[in-house]
Amino acid sequence: MLALTSIGTTTYRPHEELNSTMAATITRRRRGRAAAALTALTLAVTTGIALGATAAQAASTLGAAAEAQGRYFGAAVAASRLSDPVYTGILDREFSSVTAENEMKWDATEPSQGQFSYTRGDQILDHAVANGMDVRGHALLWHSQEPAWAQTMEGPALRQAMLNHVTQVATHYRGKVYAWDVVNEAFSDWPEGVRRDSNLQRTGNDWIEAAFRAARAADPGAKLCYNDYGTDGIGAKSNAVYAMVKDFKSRGVPIDCVGFQSHLTTLPSDYQANLQRFADLGVDVQITELDVAAGPQQAAIFGSVTKACLAVARCTGITVWGIRDSDSWRTGEDPLLFDDAGQPKAAYTAVLDALNGGSTPPPTIPGVDPSAWYVLLNRQSGKALDVYNRSTADKADVVQWTRNDGTQQQWRFEPSGGGYQLKSRLSGKVLDVLDWSTANGGDVVQFEDRDGENQQWTVTANGGYLTLVNRYSGKALEVQGGSTADGADVVQYDSWGGANQQWQLVKVG
Ligand code: G3I
Image (tube, rainbow, N blue to C red; front, side, top):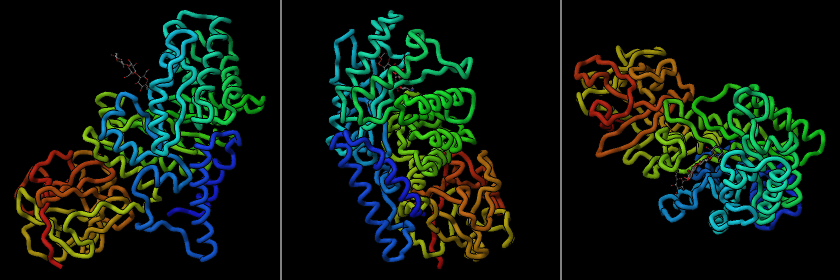
């Protein structure tokens, strides 16, 4: 559901806080978003019609769905990939914001001292502008990817060179980027809770605030962010960043936002609370480099991160660190929303669904009538998906049995959470992975409808057969061991395309 309150807070706050000097290209876009939300809000208030998003109202792209929530949804982009039409096709369709993955960094923009090179950064900016996307600037200062000439410098000469860099680059992009990562990754991992040693840090502890002041002077309209990784939950490192932001705010150092990179494998349980405590300091928060290692929880984590951002009024947007798995810096971890072929993954559906407040219409299954009852015949055995012993109880086992068309063998596909639930005609209960198991062999039972992701299935059709993948575990519905016997258990297992994981539909009611 898209709550009225979330429209009010999330749309207007970022707009109202925009600095008046910000370029027309940026304000025009934001004004359009605010106006759209205002129209919807007025309509709801004057007609008394609740604004609950129905399936028909749900947006079908990440950018549009985020915009309806007053946020942006961005991707890191590599200039070298802009000639790939599959890449740009996804970028231009799905995203409303762009971050240069490497092209606006110090080594790229000032390869020799005092000689600035904006060609590749501008290429990304131009593509974004031409396609109506905003641009996040990344990153003015970072101990990594310093140009070789700066790496050998120390002390006052480096301080001067670094501030000149900030001034020049922020001036070049003045009015064209809506936010800058002014300083990136300045805190240590070990020991945690202290500044990272670097030649920048050795110029004096005030180097970060000096950089923020120089950036503000060069581009007063850009939001100025501190950006880091490993700060996604509450801990020694994020506490140290928190203390710095609090200190900056109390002393009037110009900081507007904090970026949480969110290169994740697991999700810290206090992720949302951490975002909220920073927001409570009076800064915007942004998810700046999101990617999640492939695994059973990948889609769920992407969905939870999105929900966390939506739950924090000052979380103004999310950026994923690349488009397809093959574009990612995390080689072999398949951590993004689109597969190598550019097809949206379950993680994409989870994000879109979260942005739509849980009301994304599921993709239609060719030839399947959501009001009809079907028997599902396993391709390997020819037997039917069956509630064992005609039970109507929660946790009753689901097995295969010789087809007899009884109501314990009849199922309906009901749209739910961007996927489908399978409802038993006999019991009214739904197909469920017991105890939210993510294991191979996890048991499949029937359970009362609780709208759980372990009760939702992504259905794909191939040559007249369906594969059903559980949205929570990412595993496929199968007859265990490829058995052909009556009573053989139906479980979940890694999807591998076997005949025991394929189901044929026969309409019976
Ligand atoms: O383009 C050259 C290529 O010509 C050359 O042959 C090759 C040899 O190594 O290098 C290529 O450049 C690489 C560049 O990515 C483009 O692919 C650099 O070596 C490589 O260091 C660089 O890695 C980038 C990394 O930052 C640098 O530390 C990643 O693409 C980029 O995704 C990554 O992004 C960072 C964020 O800026 C900050 N947060 C962490 C995040 C992930 O590490």
